[in-house]
Length: 249
Length: 322
Ligand SMILES: Nc1ncnc2c1ncn2[C@@H]1O[C@H](COP(=O)(O)OP(=O)(O)O)[C@@H](O)[C@H]1O
Ligand SMILES: [Mg+2]
Image 1: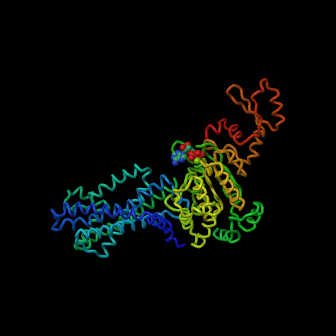
Image 2: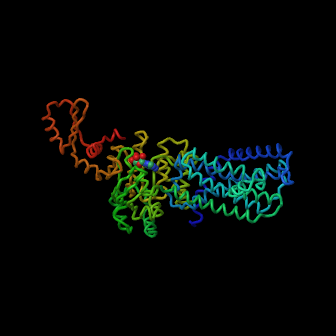
Image 3: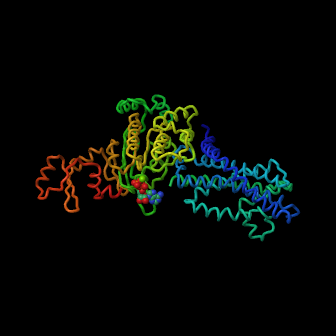
């Protein structure tokens, strides 16, 4: 078999698993966005505008960015962590003649695809709520790359955390700050300079910035998009390193 | 090596070949394959340290092709750690281990292709069916679709799970899971099978079934290494046994040799609450000794077993520790 295609069994397993849980997964993908859209679109949206934009239009790309994070990360992180630490199913991959880079590729592609599909559902709901968005090819490229970043982060977390509690802490310390500060609900520009510097070091920030800029027709922010791609590479490599480290200890 | 493997595959189905004795198998194989080494498993001064614990403390042993080799010892002896180093799941702190001539640290990829693994704890994909679990393994080892299908059919039938092939594994009993893990470990036709405590927690019937499976796989030419803390399991199943205690190997040999060394007959003498054991080479000698005792009411004379060997060599009681 072609060396590159070695990721396929891993990806296949994730797809078989998801097919069996399709109903639950779909319901999960719908509830979260509806809550967000109701709160920000209908609740707050009517009263405020940001930089001349209707708040719903402003916040939707942020929520999509956030959704790519949550869905990609959660679709891989918790399950892989449990399979590694409790059910030991991950050992199967380690004793098989397959490289960590292929293991990570299979997991990440599956998680990213899951996240990507969830974002589509959100996007559809956004339209129903009356948002105005311009979708370009670049929008989808950035969005999928974002899903890769956070699916990889899910793999990293699953490898680092040696228990369910560790996994929860990882969510609190790494994901939660990003959720609120990563340019999701309000513009990063309005923050003090030190906070701004920190916020720009988070991988979600260039994602929401790029998506928003594209959606609102403000052009394609090149540096920000380069940042998104760079994060994808960094996170993937980090995931491979963590898998290699955890696979023989 | 790639060529050797192809030749090997081409000339024998490798498994299952019924009604062929191991000796015939050996001669046949030796004629066909350019074996890398005389021994299929060789370890030298293997050590594994976890923090302050020396889980495996400088062990060296060899396993010949076609052997069933048992690693016997109480819980915490270091059996699982030893196996994990041999199957590339754990990196030795020092020392070397060769699997079919390949070094577990420097050539892990080659090692992985040689081995099938049945771990102590179920590591099946719970949300997948038996068939899907087998399919996943076949894919991981790069088997072709048609080959996978035939092999899964054949193996699930062999372990008696074909009728449950499409139920999710989480619905399986412990014994079914163990049988599925064995089938899965054989999927890619490995040369060596590692089983860690293959019958722990199983009822006597299932246990016997697993023993039969192991024996029949071995008859088809596979080398088998397993760990156990049941001395009768080692005694029933293996050609040679290594006794392990507190990270060290304290004896290696056939069960017969080991018993011979301490004395084949045991005389147990209960005085008050204390049992003392003495070993003799024959029943006659034991009886003579019994006759010389003042109080010979609580005496039991029986053939020695591996537990006696363990107690004799360590001063510990295997059943207490286990
Ligand atoms: N990952 C680990 N970290 C720390 N100690 C370990 C680890 N694995 C095993 N040990 C210790 O090594 C010793 C041998 O354990 P193990 O190989 O599981 O024994 P056995 O399989 O014979 O019951 C035990 O004292 C155990 O606590
Ligand atoms: Mg063990």
